[in-house]
Length: 112
Length: 114
Image 1: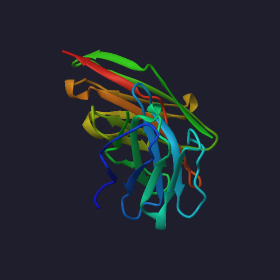
Image 2 (image 1 turned 90 degrees about the vertical axis):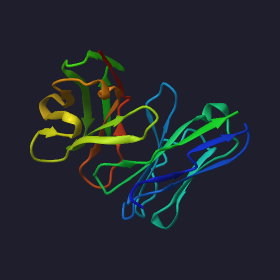
Image 3 (image 1 turned 30 degrees about the horizontal axis):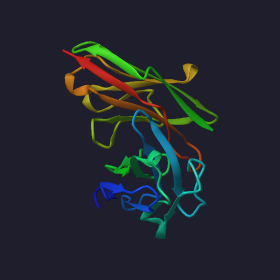
Image 4 (image 1 turned 45 degrees about the vertical axis):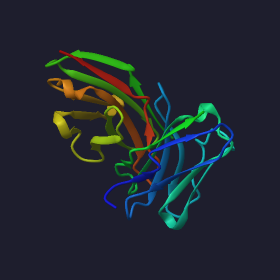
C-alpha cells in the first residue's frame, strides 16, 4: 500500500479481554515501531523491529504486552488481560534505516 | 543512547508572530534529527529532517530548523504563525550508525490566537 495501515481504527474491549492490533508497514521498509499515546502523554516507545535482528522490547510496559512481526512485514501487537490504563492510541510506524518514520493513523483502544 | 528534551509543553503565539519551538538532544554518536507535527485526531506527519550537510533545514508549511552541534539543539522556527499551525510538535532523534530506533521528545502544543 501507499502508507502504513493500521486496523482496527477503533477498538472497544472489556477489561480482562485480550486484543490484537495490526500494522501493515510500507512495502520495503525494514524498520517497524510501535508507540503508545495516552491522554496528556507524549509518544511512549513500546517496541522496535529492524530486519531480522532481535526486536528491542525495552518499552513494553508489562508482560501482558507482546508483539511479533511475521515475514519482516506485518506486525501484530497483542495486549492480554486488558486494563483500563491500557486505553490509548497505539501508533505504528515504518522506515528505512536512519530515515524518517511514516506513521499510520493509529488504533484507538478503549477498555471499559 | 539518544534522548530528546523539548522545553515547554505549551507555546502560545499570536497569528503573524514568530514561532520558536525548542529541542535539545543527547546522542553518543552523530545524530539524525526530525520534527513531526500532529494535528488533532490525525497521525504524525514529517515536517523536516536533518541527516548530513547543510545545518539549516527547510521543511513544509514554511517551517525550518537549524542543527547546532555546539549547543546540541535543533530548534524549530517559522517567521509568521498561521491559525492552521495549531498542533502538537514532536522532535525526534536517531543515531546515524547502524540500525537505531527513533526516540521522541514529549511534544510541544502550539496554540495560535487571532
